[in-house]
Length: 183
Image (cartoon, rainbow, N blue to C red):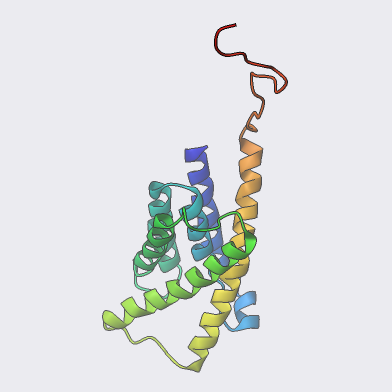
């Protein structure tokens, strides 16, 4: 299910970016738009390979930038760095625990806009920075923390729907006695 999972991840990223741009309701209520791409990047980094993670960073970043006021390509590098750091340390992370997923989602959702802001400030752009930026960062981090376990649950259900269950049966009976040596 390697390529099928990659296609599903990219399709969910495309739909999520489109819905983020189309739905203004959460942004009006909270004062900030919740970004799902860092949550998807956490999932892709922990569950898939480097190719899927890189595709998500490039395609998702370009899709997000094309529907926002960001210059094209500015979101790709922060997503890629987040994905590579998590991918490199994924053997050390508790990927099955919902609270660990939420914490990784909070960190990734906070670092992605800060990385984008860092790149924008270094390219000479003048983004609007005030105390509202801190509120938006907190809302985006909390929203990403809540969205990450949801991504894991959604793709877990997709995994179970499209994959055969693993067979746990052994060819040896547990009550079988094996005699070794000379009899």
